[in-house]
Amino acid sequence: MSGSFIRATSALVVADSLLAFHLTETASSMLHRPFWGRSCPACLPQDREKPPMLDVYAFATPNSVKVTITLEELDFPYTLHGVNVHKGEQKTPEFLALNLNGKVPVLVETDEMGQAFSLMESAAILVFLAEKTGRLLPAQGEARARVFEQLFFHASGLSPAFGQSGFFQRFAATSEPIALERFSTEANRTLHVLDTVLMKNRFVAGDEFTIADIAHFGWLWRRGFPNITLDDTPHVARWYADIESRPAVQRGIAAVEPSFSKPETDPSK
Image (cartoon, rainbow, N blue to C red; front, side, top):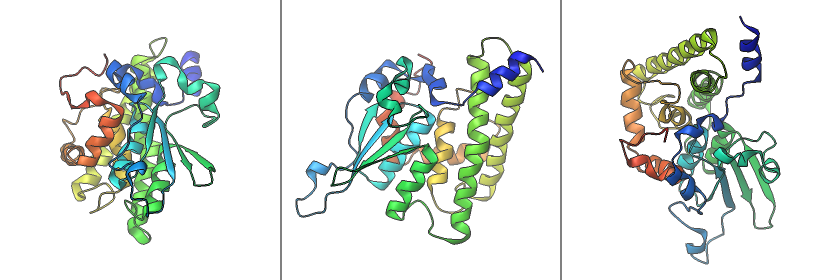
């Protein structure tokens, strides 16, 4: 194993910014416009309790889209702030004040007293939002455990495998065959694990659509980054088509990438 491989691997943090080449200029310009969900706090009847203000800092990345999809599924009003990873905006002092790790997405909830709560890490944000509503996450028992099982499998298995495979294919300063083979193999292995799960279940954690499906969908949506296809995983392909057809999922994608509906768009442009 070469020293350069060891240094590259130890330094590697699978980050949304590795996917910058996927983003279009249209998406970049649209992200800097405030975006509201299906309802808007200013449009709520005056006699209803004003909900907390939700601000999302994101870009058109696998982890960011998980948050906008979840917000759309839960019908939460929110404002979307574009963080242009092309320009390194996730490393500015202003953004680091929200997330010391310098990654998107970030959710900021501000209550009526003006107290702000900032939360990083997409899986943590999904759990936080689901628990606020009692939706997309079972309250107890085996069904809840299955959702967390898939969330942890995604965070520790599929997500880093996809990210590292894409990194060594596209961004490594020098060719690293060992790394490329290791992570490409692992990306395909974890995808086939998911295919086996979906051979038995309609959704990744059972019979109900949950935040675990949203978590996996984010990276499958950007599967072109590690050059992954669904040709050999028919159950994942069936599941992906079902999730992609959901109206809230389409709105969540459109929020971060307005050009998503153009099937022939080259994501590398």
